[in-house]
Length: 269
Ligand SMILES: C[S@@+](CC[C@H](N)C(=O)[O-])C[C@H]1O[C@@H](n2cnc3c(N)ncnc32)[C@H](O)[C@@H]1O
Image 1 (spheres, rainbow, N blue to C red):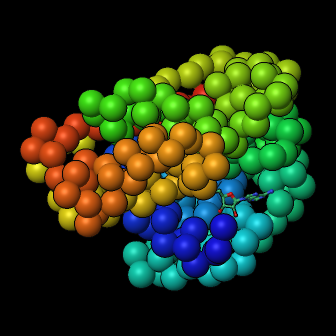
Image 2: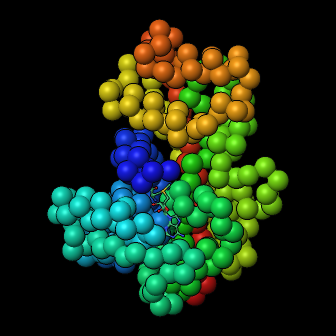
């Protein structure tokens, strides 16, 4: 995807995601004053939340492969006046440019388990840079119901390549995001745990949430033209397009929800 479009989508989606990602971070009870890594930080939106969680004496390093994302992250953090507590580093999660046991904890959202790479080596790499007793946590999108009243269409959208992405039909089931506990176990992490966080929206929708949902329809179910029947495709277009008389977000009883799942464990002492 085009980088500018991707950065735009991360910003537009933030009103949908921020509260549940904040709740996920609170669940981890990161120690005040601790220093952590936000791996695959994007434009740093969770780096800000992680920075809040560790307080004035803590520090967050956002790591990403994309220079453009990191530059935007630096701007966002500067605008928030947090440049001293949040810094960014270009690098690959597969080869994190820090020594063993550098951080008190490591976090990664919608990155590890969300790509074409094998997740296990990435979890091992996260664990390598965390000190004994520290937390390793990954979170990711795990389900949604966005088209109330159209369960069959939504089920068929969910089964398209975009709908199951980043998983690919035929891939080893153990690499699916919801199998993350096995990656954690194989990495030797202790005290494994998982929790689901949900967010829901209903009419009347604010402009912010409407924009975010329109963008989400495109993000969640891109390029479905070749995979849906022509009937399903025209129904989907009728429901998703803001200028359509049947635009689903105009329903006076519109209601939708989605979930994120957080997996975490600790480095053995
Ligand atoms: C879906 S975005 C998520 C960004 C952010 N964590 C969030 O939840 O808003 C995935 C991010 O992972 C980054 N990424 C992908 N592969 C990576 C790699 N091998 N090493 C570091 N970052 C990577 C991308 O550049 C992108 O910023």
